[in-house]
Length: 133
Image: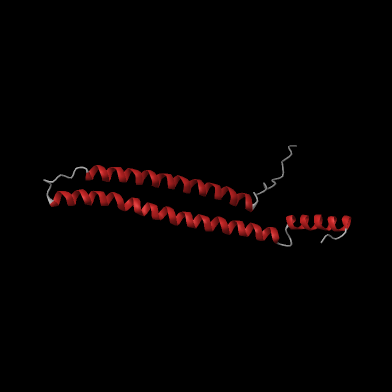
């Protein structure tokens, strides 16, 4: 007879490891977005200055208005992307800080193995050397 292996569930990663991985991915995305924003801003500045270099004294007001309108249309998405990047950075910072505070609160929980091992170490130190103070 063939033996079938028992389906043992694989151990899920610890929450702090998952949070750290997600935080690393999120910060990587934010850095990529910042680099993209900088590239877009640099390109927008170059294109706007190139458009404005077309100005001549003989240009009509309508032609100057058209050049300024195109330059403004290039500026608006860049400005919105900068605002989006700042908002995303603030959200990611808050999310990471909330994750770290939840990890710390889990560590300080009385049922936490980390806390128990710290308490055992402290108790061993006190019994071996007497209370230190």
